Length: 86
Image (cartoon, rainbow, N blue to C red):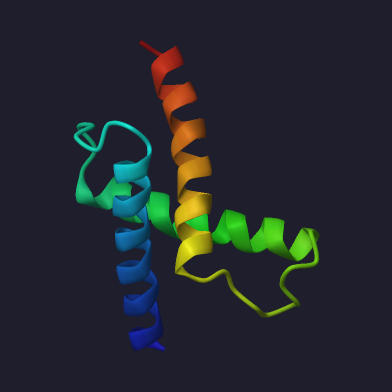
């Protein structure tokens, strides 16, 4: 069980890093924790969207590329919220 959580965290971190690289400005002042949360939430979002679209069955998760796409979606939403507060 603990090893699966470590895997989720590692994949989330790398998916968040890749999403930040593709999103335009990878040097945003966001730390490792926010990058990891971004990737984990992105994987969850893309898994949910994939299940709603019929791409994944119950119990199936998005892969790394899906996690990156989901993280980019979450990052876009984050930037809209964060940019609106300034």
